[in-house]
Length: 154
Length: 142
Image: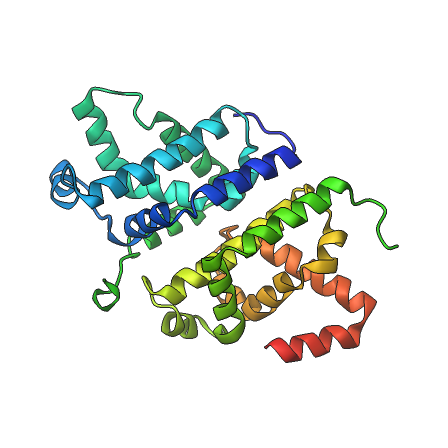
């Protein structure tokens, strides 16, 4: 991932990604992931997202969307600083799901699973540490508190 | 004729951003923000937009949308003067959030920094052209 000036093509791709994640079902999945997906172990994951469940669909939709976006960043097709400034959600998805994705990699014997997401999340952390030392650690603590209040649950 | 640097591509990008604002859920979020989102403190925010609520979702939609627009301006991808001619809603959002953001920024996290940069530049641009108009706008929307 090399650094360069952003262009109008980067802006176009940024907006294309923005439009794609507004689709109703993906919006629902992202909202679920942010507020309901709290799994640290494979047991947690199997309880929360059993195969064939809506929760499992939501998990797959969210991580595959962000892995796709990450593949574009890694390929240099979208300028990374512009992407990072607009897509903290990618880092959120990786931080929240890291243990589960690692566990699934092992279960699937597929080290390539979500490797773009991991690489871009690592680059994001490096960028954040360079831009604002300490901000990443602070943010990481804060995101664990993001949990829907019982009265807000459907 | 105020700006000779904007291009056809800037106009196209402004139109694309405009179209994104028309999506029904985004319209709902923007309408809610303009009508109801007046925050003096982080406590107000927690009361008005609890985690998981529709208001919280609307707030995040509005804030991240306008911050995204701001990043295009700070990156030099979108001509700021052409944008300022028609993007007053960004200034409204920034004016409404300025105080709360200042309370939040004990942290040096750069999140929403671009909205601040462009919001302040917009306020300066408007003040330079008509200080009375800026003050009247500010008083009306706060």
